[in-house]
Length: 127
Image 1 (tube, rainbow, N blue to C red):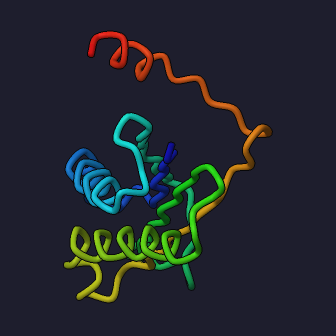
Image 2: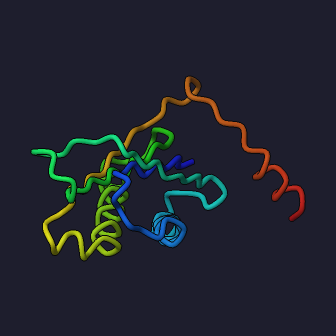
C-alpha cells in the first residue's frame, strides 16, 4: 500500500509523473511504506467552485490511503511530505495566492479492505 490519489481542478499545471515519483521515493525513504505497494493516480475536474467562483483559483487534495497500524507520528510525517512536495511543485501558484492545497490520510482496516497485488507476486517470483 499506499493507495495515493491526487484530486485537482483542471486548471492545475503539474508534471504528475515527476510528482508521484518524488512522493513515492520520499515515502519509501521513511522506512514505513513499501515501494512494491505504491499506486498513484491523478483525478482532474473541470467542474469546481472555489471561494467565490473566480476561474483562476485552483485546488489540489492529496489523499493517501494505507493499511492501519502506523503511529500518528508516521502518519503526520507522510502528510507533511505530501504538503511539502505540493508546495514545491506548485510554488508559482502558491506565490500568486491562487491555490488551496490539502492532504488527507485515511487508514484502511485490516481484514475489511482487501488488496491483491499480482505485480508484487511476479517480482518476488523473479528474484
